[in-house]
Amino acid sequence: MHRHSALILVALLATTNVHADYDAALEAQEQAARQAEEAKQAAADRQAQQMRAAAEAKAHAELMASYRKSLGATAAGKSDAELMQLMQQRQQSAMDDASKAAAQAAAAMADPRNAAALQAVTGKTMEQMQNMSDADAEALAREMEKKYGGQ
Image (cartoon, rainbow, N blue to C red; front, side):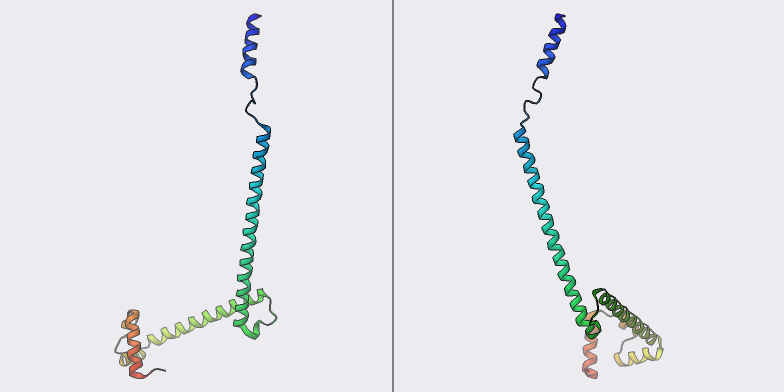
């Protein structure tokens, strides 16, 4: 029995005051500091989101104003969604027109009479014109302007 008492005494001494370095007041203070920091971060995040939303709204308003100006009387009484649709239609029409012009130019270039006329005027073949650098093209344009006059 004496042996059991000694074991119990050693166990009690080893396990006493396990929470000796726990300070409830300090823990509460640290928790309050963490919560204050989280609240501060949340407020900063909200402010950043509001600034971002305001900037996006301003950019959208400026875009819609430029669309209204570009569309003129056509834009009168139209909603933003309708303006966007009108501008998309206008852009698609412009792209279609450019494609048609490119196709017409390609067809004109394929005609040997046009190629001969180009060479007679510029002294360059179609292939030479296509492979010309920007600087050479500008020099040729200046030369043609001097030779045939500007418009």
